[in-house]
Length: 114
Length: 146
Image 1 (cartoon, chains in turn blue, purple):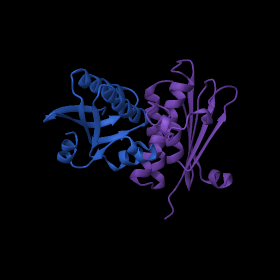
Image 2: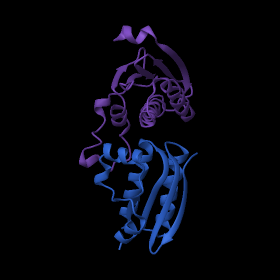
Image 3: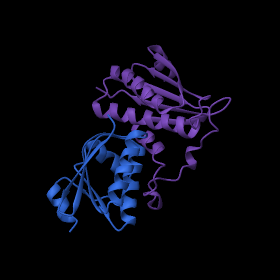
């Protein structure tokens, strides 16, 4: 299964529920296109819910970083929600925990954008 | 160590095309062999990631998707370890030339984390030139002690 992204609006925060794999190829490009579409549509407060992401490789990590910088360059913010242990481990190994704000409570994460 | 590895070794040799489907094939074949060594789910996942990153380097950066070039994969399962050797037919690769992905100025780079993940997830990681052309990466993961 490649990645599947669904979005929902919670106030002015766009929550992106991601499921599946973000790896080089279809998964990474789907993720990239979706983030760019959201930014182009004026969504600048993005909360990526990665609870159902089963697998992410270095290309997927690259897409997370790319999404972060794309949104930041438009004056917006990307934050992460509900990381699995494996994704947490990857963010620690890559030191990206120092870049992303990470939450395990959606309401708290949404409030943090205010 | 080499004698111990060869004593009960089971080896699988694959010659794969330079395409992304080969990345999946190598990962799946490695995990099929690794299953025999009682790695836990996280270790299996990490071995899979390491093989995946190595294959992506071989296909994308080594062989540059060239249909005339192959990726050579050798998976050896011994009693105490799994060894994966992945070789491309590209122009060569110096892992020390990869910018440190943990340096603050590189944290937001799109790419450059694959070698670090291979090193982090496997017990041994060696890169050497392949004759007559290309790069060979050898990775070893030892069976967890009971």
